Every structure is written in C-alpha cells, then in structure tokens.
Length: 121
Image 1: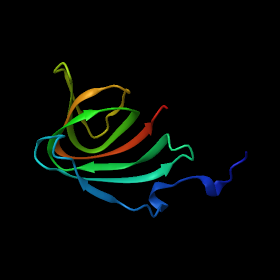
Image 2: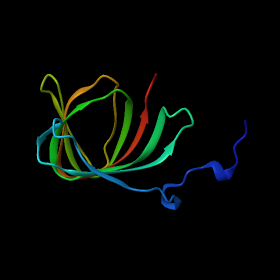
Image 3: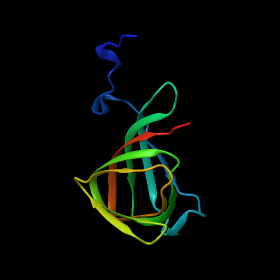
Image 4: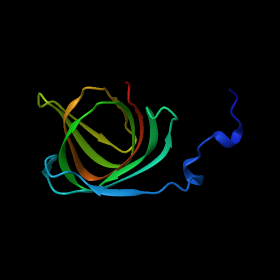
C-alpha cells in the first residue's frame, strides 16, 4: 500500500489536542505534578505512538509495558530502577526505556520530551 505526502505527520502543523492530567495518588511519591501529553500519531494497530509529553516537578512510580524512545527537549529528570541505580537525563539526551523497566521517574526541573512508544502484544 503506497502512502502519499499527505500521510506524513508534521508535529508543528498538527492540531492535536493537549491532554492535561495529574497522576493517580497511588503512583505519586512526591508532589502532584501536572502533566500533559500531545499524542501526534497512533498507528492503526494502536501499538505505535509518537508525541510530546511534559511534566512539572515531582516523583512517581513507573512500570513500562512498552518500549519507549525519549528525546529530552527541556528540563532535567532522574530515572531510578527498582535496585536504586539512577540515571539523570537533561535536554539533548536521547535514550530507550525497555519494556519491563520499573522504578521511579523524578522531574527535577520542568521536563518536556518527544516520545516514541511501541507496545508489543
């Protein structure tokens, strides 16, 4: 199946709604950060998503059921695994979080990232 130029999703031209939310109380460790997501693309099978995520400062529990590529555009975050090992990421950092990763995500300075997620079924 051939796709034309109009099938390309350009973030800056998209009129995607921004969804704002607070995390469920059982996930929060510190603060109650306002977060937002702007999902610019979802594949027909719903397993592949791409967009922009933002969060205010805070810390919460994470468990990944998907693979996620992250490109930090602004801010600083600290990701800590279940064993206590941590990685600090900042603007310009690009990385992949594997399916099955669990631990915490702490936003130290308001964070904005591009995400690319693949949820394997």
